[in-house]
Image 1 (cartoon, rainbow, N blue to C red):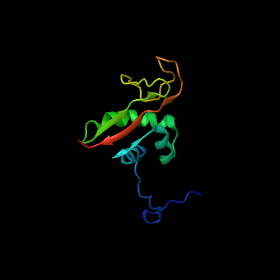
Image 2 (spheres, helix red, strand yellow; image 1 turned 30 degrees about the vertical axis):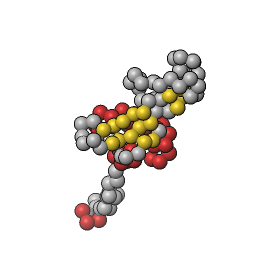
Image 3 (cartoon, helix red, strand yellow; image 1 turned 90 degrees about the horizontal axis):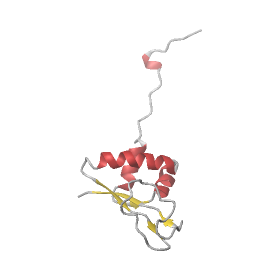
Image 4 (cartoon, rainbow, N blue to C red; image 1 turned 135 degrees about the horizontal axis):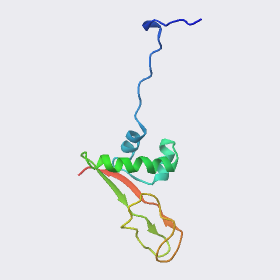
Length: 111
């Protein structure tokens, strides 16, 4: 037996919270964090954080904010990955082949 609900009997939807990208943007505004820090704060996987950061990088640059990236650095020889397009941490250092690499840091600043 299907019973139709009246408009007054329908449940009221919950107030919409911020989207994940909005949460990341507000978290990065004025802060410099790694993807691991962001994933711990927002409770999503690191892989998802990187996917969202790629989109945030495109959209934030158009607004009044700047998306900043501090490049990864090899902890063994000090090589800095300046010309890297990918946001993820590199696997190995091209100079010393070391695998101890500091993660890139992300932030949002206002000019």
